[in-house]
Image (cartoon, rainbow, N blue to C red; front, side, top):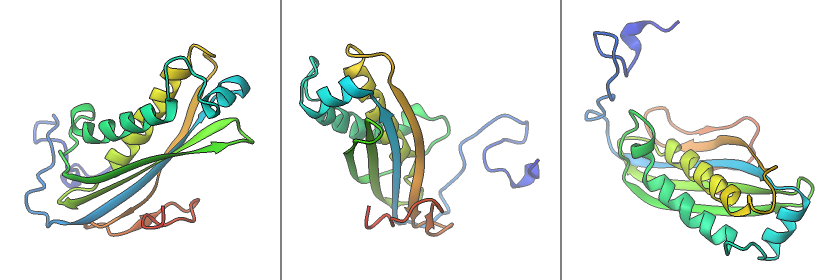
Length: 170
């Protein structure tokens, strides 16, 4: 277990508090997150052919992902309100898996990172794909939501060992 004196969120009484970031310096920060939505044959085909009754699945999911990134501090307890300077959400059809790969890139200049915003964008976009396709099948799986890379801040740059793409190239 971690030394309680080094933890950033517990208060002296053992409750929780938001970490004080006021002494941190502003810096450019980016994050890339990814995930996968397994749809199955029919739903995958219908999304690709724009044949879902609710409308354009990927455009709606893209907007939802961007909105989700902007609302991260309202959804995740103790998450700072980051100034988001840019959010990109995009999709790739994964034929072999009959899945849609979801990727989000977030960018900020501030005192806190934007990893949670990228992860939230992927999660909300994925949930939107599920919502729009559930009339075709309920057998939809959302998975492998993970941080691929981040830049900036005190901890510096980081890239997942299983990824070969830098945030700037993602």
